[in-house]
Length: 398
Figure 1 (cartoon, rainbow, N blue to C red):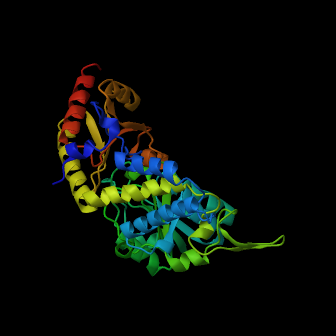
Figure 2 (cartoon, helix red, strand yellow):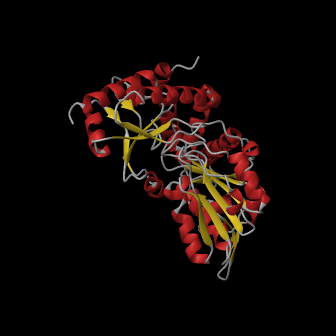
Figure 3 (cartoon, rainbow, N blue to C red):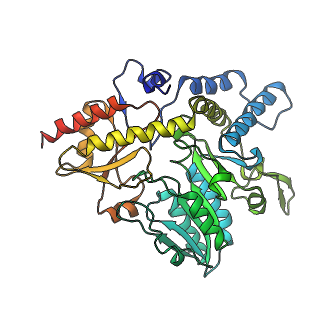
């Protein structure tokens, strides 16, 4: 049975603490098993991977590549399609600098108003470099993608579609399978920013139908500094590498170089192998709980929170999508979000405030900043109750 109170015992940061941590869309806490795995690597098998014939190097390489296999199994793909990066931002930039550089004037890149800056800025730069046009899908009043006239966005000129799986501001879960089909109908490549998806939802690449999927380890109980780019084999093989250096080469002469096989041609230099091994441990931890169970828990908790928040006077929730995850953004009339966060901190409640790296979306919402609460496996109704009680107390001060 899913029990957040028992799960919370696995996380040292909650030991002997009344911390209410509601900033999981930014980063998640780490269970002892993940911390122990990284510690063990440094203590028992610390050597550069792929580059040593001695036992220590072989052990490090085995742990590193075992983690790649765990990630591949987690999303239902071949391990040779798993590229280790530093995170979602790194993964999307890799794509924007590789397939993005194949664009030409007249070509179009399609993203949306709800994207994180990491899925906006790289495409703005790609458009500026190549002369391509960047287009934005708008959103409805409920905070969902407006697909009422999709044909005006998905055209024969569309070459790249890059959309978030789940909004980091509104919690909206986008219909990736449907969007992938639309992209492919016009011959476009479909890229998914899965930073808020893979950590909260069961994801299977064959089911989603996209061409690339990017996500970050630190948002799913793994260490910081490690992320994933998944891509279809044929597309990865066609792509030019973004970074050059050790490991990603096959041969180097004074005149030219040739590239290693995938995925290694995209992994220049010494990889974050300790963090990658930690990501493998995080996959084990989440699999033991079950991603379907995690998704169900978060949706139930989100419904509970929305019901409670809607009872608070002068609190405005942004977005009301039918399919949504555990992210809720809101404003309280008469209280600036930054002031709200500081007062909540007095009660040891941690939330995120600001533009959430989504300034175009906040402009659409008519806000310069919002408050955001976001859930994970160790949150439960008691966290929501404490949060709502604190909000009510804070309102009395204004």
